[in-house]
Image (cartoon, rainbow, N blue to C red; front, side, top):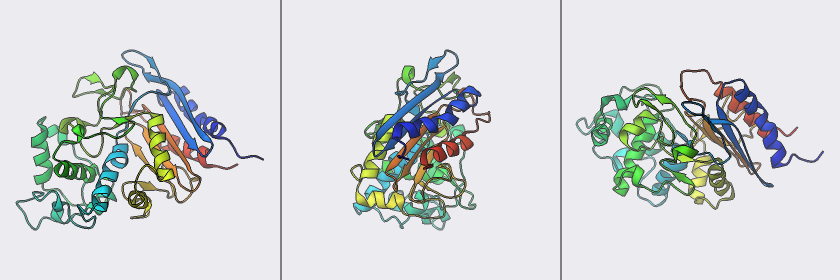
Length: 336
């Protein structure tokens, strides 16, 4: 029996996506699949349903949320290490000397770049920084001087907020003024974007502007903020799979395990992860809160993205996104 083509594999993987749309679990989605024989992109549902309905298209732009961590922040931190500007095992104070500057013994001053990349720090998962004000420079100072309560290592936005601040210090500019990268941007045309939440504190349905509360208040941060399309993600993935899109140093590190579930920035295949049980061991991936995800299977030379607007118009709803991501991954990777 001949192997499935990329088009056939994408069609199979879109079956659970279509079911989730018809069941009302998600408004819409775009699935992109890249293989050695080409690529396929399939769209379904709506990009926005309130206050007006708009159809989802293959070229719809999405708020990529935490994919920013691996598409933007991780490769730039690794590039600084490759160039000798930082030591990955050295403390963040190499670039942020004022981190907890009033307490030289503070544990935060010993946290390394590598620990942040691998989510191996004692920072909490997330803190509502945006509730402390709207002045982005004041909020940056708050992040740096706040006495963080140490806890067990968890996946933490704080890790990448600090890495973003380190990039800002090195380059002397805020993240939102840096080049977002080929195929990506820091905002998008609302008319061609997937809507996210009807935001309670901003008082409107968000489309084309960042959903993440802390990124909005900071006016750019290292953990969220990028926008992109399925083709943009597949182009980026193709560069990583072929070795043309990043240096050997960067690619080696994003594949190198730091724990049972993490590499430098990325998640690695492990039981129960977002990429499904059929994904080979060398697969890496990452997800975004808005309903996005990107996975790279280096063994098969394959990548796929699932982009949904699962928090539109509210996050306070069980969309079943975790199960959907795993079902798509299994359908993409299964050989039978």
